[in-house]
Image 1: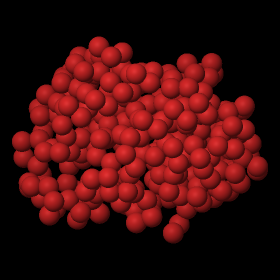
Image 2 (image 1 turned 180 degrees about the vertical axis):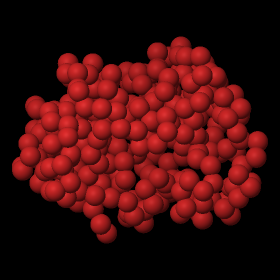
Image 3 (image 1 turned 45 degrees about the vertical axis):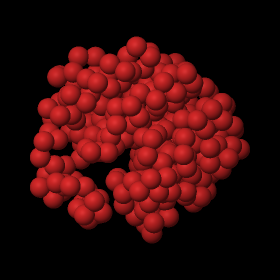
Image 4 (image 1 turned 90 degrees about the horizontal axis):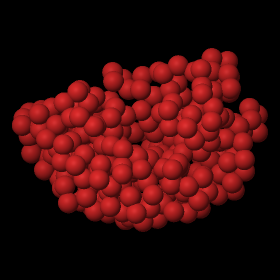
Length: 279
């Protein structure tokens, strides 16, 4: 399986961003299921030193805390560490068969390793028509708020044709998928976003929507545009204002230029989620 990381590509990245290096571990494979990712991180740190930011991506924060404890404790002395933690309430179901239940319930150990819950962004991702339940979001939002998490990102399922492997898995499982999910257009998304925002705001949670539905920001007052690699968030936590540019991975994306050390194609080794960006 090809890895994204190479010494040459990371050297070029560092030459471009200087002191503003930002690593993702990893948008492409959950580090809770990918031991090689921690080995690559160790190799990079030994050769190139600590990045400005390391951002973790996981549906299983307990295992990430166990697997990465030593590295995270050491790295925290030199780098800002944040985490994107996904909890949709679907863990263990057909949709997320390999995901342990209760990501938010098990996030405290990871939070303590990386600087507290202000370093955590909760992801309710994806929102799947006919599967999403507002009551599930409400329960998760209340749990996040009780933990002190004040940031959340929602993301609606992408249209057919965006992810080829996902299309094959969904075609026989989600009624209307092959026809483009009629009725679940931007108007439907706006209605859902209004409902979720009305839950999140009184709990003190800043709710943002990812790039695929960036048009909702104009339709839903109070809804923010998401930037997973968020310059403002990173700067507030670290006290450093980067000069590195935003590098949108797709239209509407506000992420800082980043380096992902992961690889695609590990679906069978990961959680086996039916809707998976990575494979």
